[in-house]
Image (cartoon, rainbow, N blue to C red):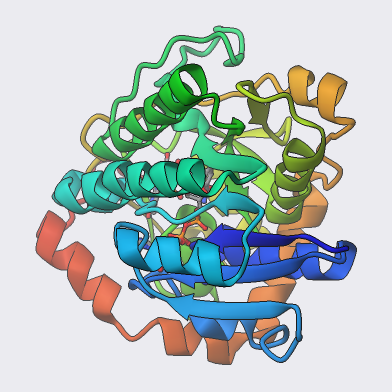
Length: 344
Ligand code: NAD
Ligand code: TYD
């Protein structure tokens, strides 16, 4: 019989892509528990909402009574935990919601999972827990020490430590995954790639923090989703698996590539004050996942970026609905007037 899994944060970017991937590629039933914060958007799931194998529950993961009721009523067998406050800049402006959702919410889920004897708990974490790399450092492995630099990364590292403790202390069948920067359809346009695409489409300036030479490893979102299911099905309990795209790029080069593909001028690039504590470089060694999970990233950055741009071009109504202007005002409030730091 097909299993029923709980995806937390399924109305967000990765969660919605994950639910779509599962419903298309497995016979599982999926329950989506999501608080619908500014980042949660049920329009991300419009094409699957009438699927009989899909259910949405509105609520917060910190709500223990609700989590218990969901696990019980839907006979949940496994959890893929995506719900989080996920944006570094917001964590710099206000850290408390990150502790509430990412740490306390994860604790509530872990306790409920333990009580209900679920078969797998996949904890979706990030490479940002490892901190930052110099230009010539080898990529992060699962053995790299935790050295989070932003309140977001610290909250994720805190949650990772709780997951580890629940495996060690209670034998909870949990696995941690740590992925590099995702991009693709349905990403909220506060993160670099969708922000740059949406602004370029509207011929608006694209803010580049500091000198723009920070490096991120980019992975197409469905490659991450495949990895999460592979970890669920083939991962060893108590292990951590890194996922990455083997696509390190400087921010400035990512933005220039977007402008080139959209036929927009480089003059839209606006250098602004750097992010406080900005991590210089992330890079991921994902060979353990390749070895143990029969997984590898399949989409090249060039193909994935072209797909992503096409999606945003074809879904202007989604972008317009999301871009109520709230987050623009948000940034203005948080950072005040941005100023150019590098003349070009
Ligand atoms: P997102 O911000 O797009 O979505 C987060 C979702 O969680 C939203 O639907 C939101 O409504 C929901 N949510 C937030 N707080 C909640 C709460 N207290 N209770 C229930 N639901 C809540 O985030 P994303 O980019 O899809 O990231 C998903 C997960 O993947 C996060 O755990 C993040 O740390 C991790 N991750 C993201 C990336 C990336 O590049 N986006 C990379 C590695 C890991
Ligand atoms: P982001 O998409 O916020 O992801 P993360 O901080 O989790 O890596 O940012 C990616 C990189 O792009 C990061 O180095 C910060 C930078 N950045 C800009 O230069 N301008 C922007 O407007 C944003 C949102 C990010």
